[in-house]
Amino acid sequence: MLPSPNVLEINSLQPLLQLHEATLESLRHTKNLLAFSGGGDSTALFFLLKEHNIPFDIAHVNYQTREQSNAEESYAKELAQTHQKQLFTFTCKLDESNFEHQARGARYTFFEKIIQEQGYDTLLSAHHLNDQLEWFLMQLTRGAGLVEMLGMQEVEERESYTIVRPLLHVSKKTLLAYLQEHNIHYFNDESNDSLKHLRNQFRHTYATPLIEAYEDGIAKSFAYLKEDRKRLLPHEVMRIKDLFVLPKDSDDLINIRHIDKIAKQLGVLLSKAQRDEILKTKECVISGKIAICFEEEKIFIAPYQTEDMDKKFKELCRKERIPSKIRPYLYTAGVDPSALR
Image (cartoon, rainbow, N blue to C red; front, side):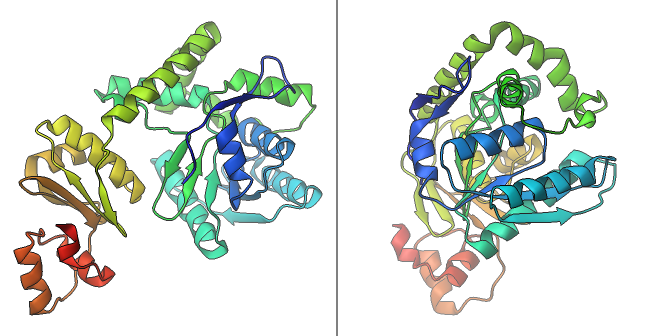
């Protein structure tokens, strides 16, 4: 697990790009994969990682949606060859309906396949301050709580790897200035200007004007809010392999915040409807992937599985009051139910 960050300022650009020292130091000792599109954000991160002597390889997805898609892939190949990076590419064609959701699913399936096969520890993403504010504002309008509004974290633990977003507190304007100062080529994705996507509407109508006017204050506010977020997250979670057991709070708002964080670690982003279902039923399976069960004093969360179990194991689970939807995972993972006392 990566340590909590402290701020380090680098001198290559005014205003200074603020990168987190502890995060950078940890990345020098892990095997890193950069999600690279060829756009300004990931290109800036590519050269900043090199500047800080961080080892990494790159992964590029070609969605074949624009004339320059192939040129972006060629640019990824050129950078990989020039700077001696291993390159992984994936080409796909997706339906236009709900494209962003499909693209995200295809992208992360590809990244996670590489991570598993090649043994990478971290996935580096070039999300920045503008992205963070866009997400915050979108969640704000949907009636979300603080944990959901701060969904983007600089260091986010997943099931078998860690997502690191080193630029999360750096503005888009600062990144573009860095690219211009160093005369670095990048591609501009014109689809980001289209207002047919809700996120672009938030970007151009609200987030960008706010950051241009109040960048320093917004960055400081996110830093304070993230400290507040830590206080809302569980401190007594028991984890055995991919089984999580946490104390049940009398406040369901606190419970669902904890569940939301754990579900994300197991690869599931909960929707509002799913959160409502969890709190209403207190025992359900979400997306066919994870089982969530409330007991008198505990909440159990584990990958959902169906498996025939022997009678002795079933009886042991019954004595230990293990929910029925959780038992198959314990059985297949070789977890002793008595270890959950």
